[in-house]
Length: 160
Ligand SMILES: [Cu+2]
Image (cartoon, rainbow, N blue to C red; front, side, top):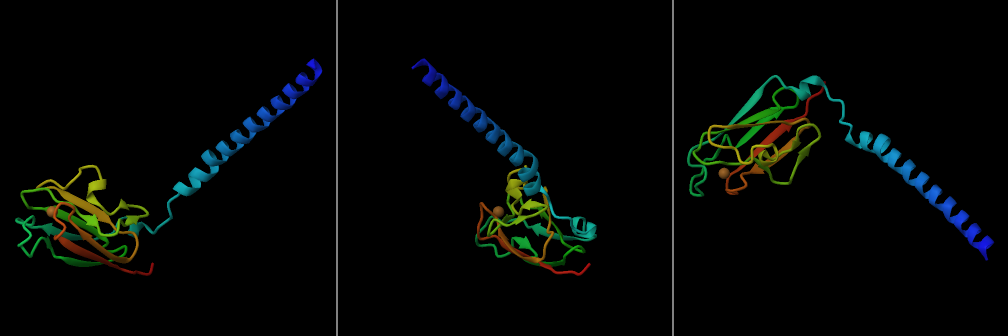
């Protein structure tokens, strides 16, 4: 009887050790291989990361009024990737606004195309929001508190 339980204990002990080793290996894999690889950002040309030119968009006074037709001015802008793919929105209105992607677009480098996700909440009066687009495309956006405020950024493809 005693002998048998000793054998059972022994088997249980080996199972526990095997389990601990398996957990350690999978944690090591996750921490040192999986996470660093999935966090790796693509290598992009320097001009894509830091384009020479900036496109300016103004959020004009009175933008929070649904009856006012002008809010993001100009409403649609176009830039070239790696040349003029940085956009700066300046809020010249007296109330806060946002620049929020219509489809939750996330840029691989610049992150969420939503001014709310970049630390300051809504863009306060007289403040700016800057976003660098690192891939070509059409990016529709709106203002979160005033969804009738709508704009569009088109970034054209460039060869490098
Ligand atoms: Cu607004």
